[in-house]
Length: 529
Image 1: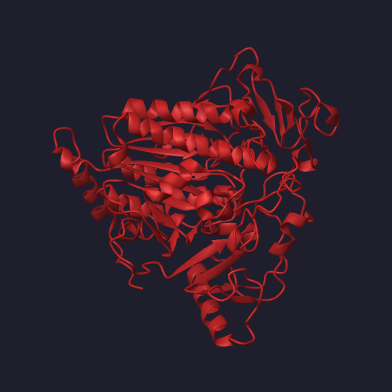
Image 2 (image 1 turned 45 degrees about the vertical axis):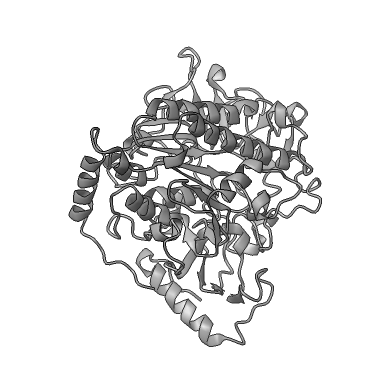
C-alpha cells in the first residue's frame, strides 16, 4: 500500500483557505461542495440491519439508503466502545494513543477529551466554509477538568470549542447522569431555583436509588446501573435537582429528529456538516409509543426500527429541502452489538434466531470482528453509484476523507491515523488503499487485521479499565477480553474466528506481531506478545 507523504500543517491550512474562497458566496454553484450528514448509531450490530441480513428487524429506510449508495462489508469502528470511536472520528487519531482516563468510556461529568484548538473534523470543515452542528449523543466530555463541571452555568469547553457552531446534546450515554439536554452551553429547561448536582462517587440523597426501590423501576438493572432513578429507570451515578430539565426516554429520538431537521432548515443555503448521534440500541432501551412491540425481537428490535425511522425522517427532510442530490449521508455505528448491558429488558430472551453480529464472532467491548465490524453506508446521488464493496474503511479515515471531499486536505501531522479514502468512497478505484486496521477493546487490548489475516496478541490480564464508574471486572460480558495466548485467524476461510492457526503459520503471526508493535510503539503500548 502506498501511503501519501506528510503535508506540512501550513500547507494544509493554505489548502483550506483556498477551498474556503472557492466556496464563498458568489462562487459558481457547480463548485459548491457537498453537504455532509454523518449519522452514528450506538451499539448497532452488523447483522441488525436488513441490507446486512436481518429479517426479524425491519429497516426499510437504511436498506433504501444502501440501495442508492455504497454499502461496505469491511467497515470498521476503530474501537469496540463508544467514546474512543467518537474521539477517533473527530480527531483522525486512534484513541489508544491517549491515556485511558481521557478516552475511556467517560462519565457524564468527565472533562473534554479533545483539546480546544485542535484541527478536528468539524473545525477543518468550518475553515473550508461549512456551518457545523452536532445533535444527540456526545460522550466526549465537557469542561476543562480543572474544576468540576457546573451544569447550572455556561458549560465550556465543549463542542463549540472544538469546531461546532451549534450543538444540542446529551452529555454522555443515556444510562449516565446528568439526564438532561444541553443546547450550546446551557442545560435546556433548567429552573435556577432547582440547581443540578452530579456525583459518581456518593449518593446525593435526591430520591431513592434502583438498589433501594427496585419496585419503582420500569426495567430491572444490575448494581452498576442502579443509581438515581429518573423517569422510572435507574442510572449510573447520582443526580440531584434539575427536575424540570430531565429528559424523558420516550422522547429522545423525536427530539434528535426535530433538532436535526431544524438545523438543516437553518443551514440549507450554505454548505453544512451535521453530526447526528443516535441513542439506539444502547441501554436503557425504551421505544417511543409508535414503535412499542413492532419488531419480532422485543424492545431491542423495537428501538432499532425506531432508529431506522429517525434516519428516514432526516433523509426525507433533505428531499423536501431540495438538498438530497448534493448531500453526502454517511450512516454507521460506534461499535458492535451487545444484548445484556446492565438492564433486564429481555433482549436475550426475545432474540429468537436474530443474529445481531451477523456472521462474526464477539460483541461490544472485545476485539473480535463483531466488536468493530459495523454497518457503513454512504449515499451521495450526485457522485456515488450504487454498489457493495469489501474494501477496508475505518471510521478514523473520515477525517482525511471528508477533508478531501470538502476541498481541503488533512495530513498525518493533523490526523495521524486517518487515510484519505475518498476514491474508495466515491468508487473511483477498486484498490485496497487501506491494507490494515487496528482494533481496540477494553484495557487497550489491541488486534490487527491485515488482508485476510487477523492477529490478537495475548493479554491475559485485560480487565475493565476504561469502563467508567461502577464496572465489575468479574462481569461475564468481558471474559473474552482476556486473551491467554496469541491468536491468528484467516478470515477468508474462518470468518467466525473459531480456529487459531498460529501453530500452522508462525511466520504470518510474527509479521503481524511486528507490524502491530510498530504501529503502536509511539503510544508506548508496551510489548506485543
